[in-house]
Length: 509
Figure 1 (cartoon, one colour):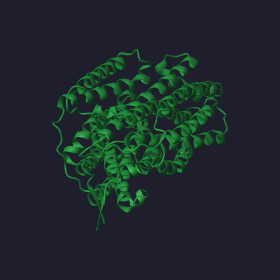
Figure 2 (cartoon, one colour):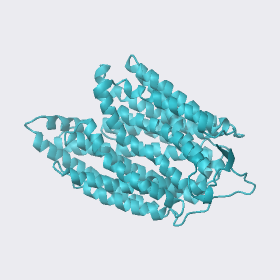
Figure 3 (cartoon, helix red, strand yellow):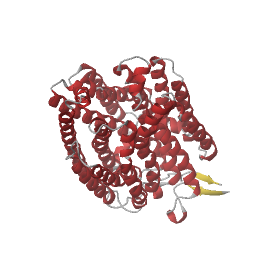
Figure 4 (tube, one colour):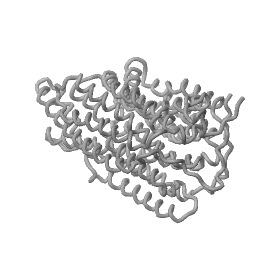
C-alpha cells in the first residue's frame, strides 16, 4: 500500500489508479442521477394515461424532482464538511435508491410525486458531493482531466435518456424507468464503500438555519415560477411571477445577510476570487443559452419531422460523439493552459453550428442536421467542463465543498431558466403562426401537423418557428463570448494560504 497526497501525481500529470477508481464511482452516481431526469421526461404522456390525470398534474413528477434538487443542493456544502463527503455521498445514494424503488411501485399519482421528491433529495446531493470528492482527490494539477471525466454523464444523460426511456416505456413498463436505477445504485453504493477515500468530518461551522430558510425555498420558488412560463403562456401569469418574485426576494435577502454573517450557507466570499467569479458568470450565460437551445432539437425531430422518441434520441447521438472526442483533449489542455484559449474556440464551433440550425426547414437534409450537431458537440467538449475547471482551479481544498455547491446551484438555475425561455419563445411563435393563445401554440401545431389536409403547410410554419427560436439561442451564445474573454489566458496558480494544511493523503492500494 502506498500513500499519496491529494493534488499530486506522478510527474504532476497522469491520472493514477487511485483517482480513476474514485472517478468511476462518481461517474456512476452522476449517470444515475442525470439519466433519471431525462428518462422520466419521455414517459410523462404514458403516465398521464396510466393514472387518468391531466398533463398539469403529471408535470409534477418532473417538477417535484427538480424542486427537491434545488432545495437540498445549498445544504450539501455544509453537510460535506460536517459529516464527511464519503458518508454524505453514500447517504445520497441510499435516498435515491429508496425513492427509485418506491416510485416504481407507486399506486397512484400522489405517491409517485411524493417518491420523486424523495429521489430528488438524494439526486441533489450526488453531483456536488461527487464533484467535491473527485476534485479533492485529483488536486488542482489534474482538475481539467477530472472535469473531462465528470463531463461524460452530463453528455450521456440528454442523449441516452430519451433512447432508454423510449425503449423501456414501449417495450417493458413505465415502472422500469425507476427500477433501472436499483442495480446501478447498489453497485455504486458497494463501490463507494470499497473505493472512496475515507475522510474525517471537519470542524464545521454552525449550521446557517436562517440562511437555509431563505436560499432553499428561494431557489425552489424561482425555478418553479420559471418552469411554469411555457404552460402559462408568458411571465404575466400569476402562477409565474408570484413564485418567481417571491423566490428572487428570498435570494436577495440571503445575499444581503450572507455578506454580514461569518458562516453563511453558501459562501459568497468565493466570489472575491476573480477566476471563480468570471467562470461562474460565463457558466450562467452558457447554460441559459446552450441548454435552452438544445431543448429545441428533440422537439423539432418529434413535431416537425414526425420521428419517434427513440429515433429522436438516436439522432442526437452525433452531438455526444463530438463532445467525447474533444473532452479528453481539452481536459489535458485545461491543466496546462488558461481556459480562455480552450473555451473561445469551442464557442466559435457552437456559434457556427447554431447558425446552420437557424436555417432549418421541414425538409433540411438529415446529413446537414447531423453534421451541425457533431460540430456543436466538438464545441461543447471545449466549453462546459473547462469553464468549471477554471472556476475551481485556484481554490483551496477546504473550499471545494462550498464551491461545488455554488457551481451546481448556478447550473440548475441557469438550465431551468434557459429551457423555460426557449420553450416560451417557441410557444409564442407557434401560437402566432397558428392563431391561438401562447399556451396552446405547440398543441395547435401538433393537431395541424397530424391532419393530412394541413400537414404540409403546418410543418412549414412550425419549422419557421423553430428556425427563429434558434436565432434567439444563437444571439445568447454570442453574448457568452463577452465574459469568456475575461477567463484566464494562462493557467492560474492554485491559491495558497499561510498555514494552510496540506490536503489529506489518499490511500492507493
